[in-house]
Amino acid sequence: MSEQPPGLEPGTRVVVTGAARGIGRALASRLAAGGCRVVVADRDAEPLAEVAHRLDALAVPGDVAGEAGIASLVEAARDHLGGIDAWFGNAGIDRGRGLEMSEQDWADTHELNVMAHVRAARLLVPEWLERGRGRFVVTASAAGLLTMLDAPAYSVSKHAAVAFAEWLSATYRHRGIVVQAICPQGVQTDMLTRSGELQQLLSRDEALAPDVVAETVWEALGSERFLILPHPEVAGYYAARASNTDTWLGGMNRLQRKIEEARA
Image (cartoon, rainbow, N blue to C red; front, side, top):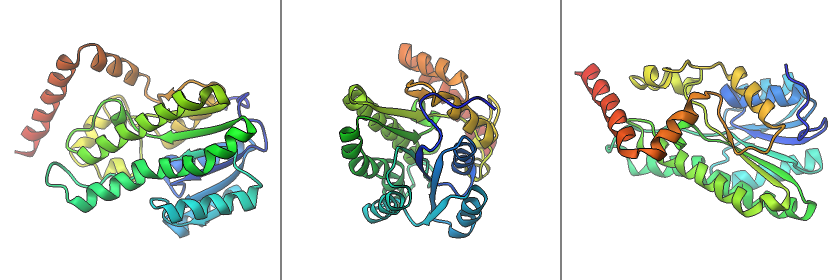
């Protein structure tokens, strides 16, 4: 394991949402192993309690998609830790497929994948500005830099999550607030297993174990670089998308056709 990142000293007070399993659990475990004091949150109370017990952390079960859930979590974390130094907004969902997605699936995806970050920042940033430092880390996705075929709400919401994180960084970085966006491709989680025909596409550059993603994040916390890319290949795809968008879209469309052929 890497040494303590210079930007995250022992005793740092952190909150990790979506921490019952997958990337969130791995992040919470790595942060605790690095000496951070951790509060974990998730809708699934039983596995969350197991994570908290193992890490000697505080578990705050609940839904962070709405204003009340975020407010309750922030209040509980502040009461337990005496303040919050870093926020890891990891909770997210992938609902529905194609244009047939329901209005409710679109709304639910937006609330958790986008507005949960906005609502957390509203509560955290004013205090951090007074203190002169704070760290806001968003678990987005390579889908937020590229796209995810057949998953419009997930893709759109992850683009929005990255865009909001970019706005936060551009607005507050000179005032001591570090903002970072984690953008992996395939990760060995329940979400990948449920992705159906997309699983092979998402795993083309290897589906990483959550612990590997967490270690990449840990190392990146020693810097203030915005994008955290557990799959380094994503940087090249992102550059190709920006420099020659039509060629990139043509390639993505070829992948779409392969998915359709596999279903036929």
